[in-house]
Picture 1 (cartoon, helix red, strand yellow):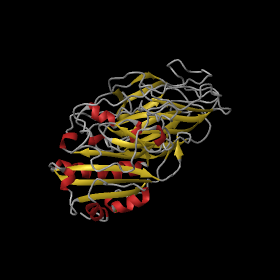
Picture 2 (tube, helix red, strand yellow):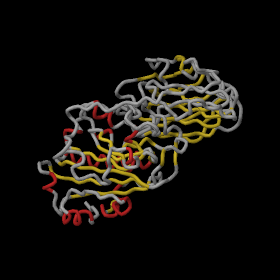
Picture 3 (cartoon, one colour):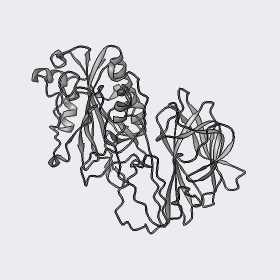
Picture 4 (cartoon, rainbow, N blue to C red):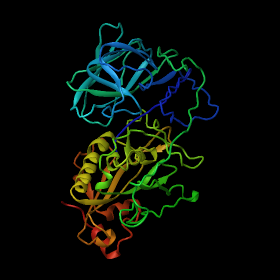
Length: 463
């Protein structure tokens, strides 16, 4: 479910700017002839897709939001750079600073991650009213993951300020998608793409892409197929099943909900051939182009500023046999709004554990889903689940997989609250399959003989 966040649009009020990201997949559901908001708020995103700086030497670079000073920092796009789109800042031991002042700034959101194989590092946000003396805002942030984490900072006062991100640790970090949120008729932030000062709203295209299916996709039926153990909700791909809509993405299969704008469940198979590492993490979050007309199309930017990660159902690292396979996991129809602690710690640890079993000579059949309502994001268009669950059937490598399942086959089921107070130890959330069925009304592992279902679904894993 990896992580994480946000390629973004910018929507303003009295005058509104749209800073389009490089993939142009930033539909935010605006009407065809929208009325500008009556307040004077703004939301501006710096995504570092415009403006290039290839060396660490100190210098200025013109970005979408204006001129920035980079000291011991560059804009990188290597495989080792964590990035939401094509480019992100790589900061070593210096800082990046706006060469302009921002008026009416109330809040800043900043996405950061570790670079390459570097260890954890620390940075802090600073502001200055005079361009000479900078003071820290909030607390220092420690970054310890390749998955982006999103931090927000409240900005006190009304004085126009410059902002600076200062590295205080000894290893490199990546920075992407800095979001400026404030209230002013003139923020002081420019848009060098040409939309600056425009008083109309620019409607971004819905866009999206499909899955390109390669020979490494699981078979449609039989051993290693994604739905070998059954269709838990009898999902179907007909319009009358909009809340239980079957989508076959070949590298995985899912039931999708129109009103929740998230999957109900996703099913896939993992063996050693799926996790070869032949492809790097693509991070090419995008809308899926196959949704029906009239459905809300979740964009890569739809989780912007929500405080939730774009949580994968099928993790990126479960599909590294090809670029096609990995890219399939970054479709937004594979995402749920997931609390960062839940996504980056608890679920990451569980996913790594399953891949370790697969690397040790086993294969896994996985069904993951979510349920409940903990609120909404994207103007009410996406439901935040209250709980996230997963069922994993583990078998030694072999053939006739359904026939090999016995009453002693190991099945791991977990059900976690979708909160930041969740414990990092996934084992604390083990439950029986029966419990998940009672909570969801699904019929899991339905292709197994009833006697075997009854035996393995009643157990709680304790290994």
